[in-house]
Picture 1 (cartoon, rainbow, N blue to C red):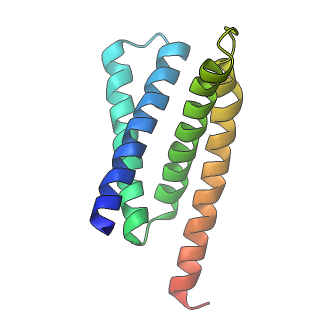
Picture 2: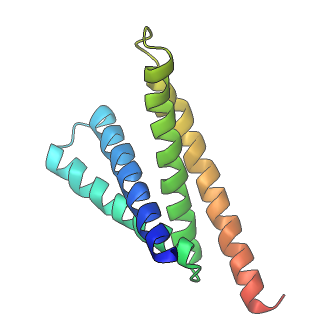
Amino acid sequence: MIQTLKIIVSLLMFLTVLFFINTLLTITTGFPAWLNTAFSLGCATMAAWFSWQLVSGKKTNTLIAVTGGALILGGLFFTLGFLGPMVFAKDTNQGPLIGVFIAAPLGIIMGAIGGYVYAREEHKDNSGL
């Protein structure tokens, strides 16, 4: 059961972060499509790996926890903020900007803080304090 959960969570995080990074780079930069895709795949792979480690309960490095948390929550917030207004308010053309300018930065900040707190608590539990 836990193996199936690890696969599902990691795949969902991979797809979410891939959509998040690729869309954000396409909208905000003039990089070639192959570079956007390559960078997005790298970030998505890291987020999937961190999700796999998190569900497995393995100890993670603080940098990986902060970066993974920022990518995962940033991707989730961006996806909800970008696609949500398209679903609920179809007549507005500026709805997806909520995901780009409000939801994604908020998710990145909250994810980084959450990743740091998670790593700190994990290290505190392992050190016997």
